[in-house]
Length: 373
Ligand code: MG
Image (cartoon, helix red, strand yellow):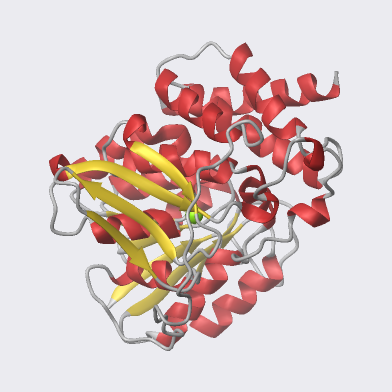
């Protein structure tokens, strides 16, 4: 029995994690739940799973009963002695502090918030290795690579190939993207996800962030990470080994499988998920991404090469820009423009918790002042 805390339990990954827990009552016990501001939904989840330990990040959000508030409540929740694993599925870099606290307390991290590794992989990964606990990825591409690498040594890896659906605008030119509305961008062809990550999929910044996430998680250089577009979203990623052999992990696009594997690794448990067969999707296709239209991949690779606090600046600027687009404040093509201008303005320094949190705030302010000027 694994005793699990879910951070971001009211979001898309959080609610699917609870679905898995519902189906595996003998393997998974939910012992703590935290949400940003949806007090009612959190309370309801706590009743269903008999969870007594709760936290709400927002100090002022309404809730039907007493719930501890703020970052200190979340840190208490993840470090408790009754906790084995923490699912980190909060939106953005806000998950960094609880992730570090949980690692240092010897907990397994099931990581959905890629921003944690994008911004802070340099300080997170040494602590993961020191803790002796695995960090199991929930991101579907990284779950695929993690599974393909089981039983191999890191030295055997030549290249990681992340697959990308290409989002709703695959094959479109820059001029066709000028007047995209938030509604059009939220209409993802194969994956059903939260708002910010769906915008990131439309700009391909999601894949740029995933390249950096893969670099840290699997200890490779950014030049060993490539991206191919694969509109059917059946192959969740590939690993190319030194001898030229390529392994991939396949299945229907459904986050419940990577969530289950991250939770019960190294076990393979039977479940009710629909089974994929090659006969159902015989025509799998792959193509190169267009770097002119989708600048995000170029920017992410550049940020990873520069290192230090640059990926943190990229991530924060993108978070601001994607949300500003959702609020109707900037146009679609301005998202990568804002990110690039913030990168130009940033003077990277060595990564530490303090410098990362500072750069995160600075990059948001800089993005706003550049976009609104
Ligand atoms: Mg992904």
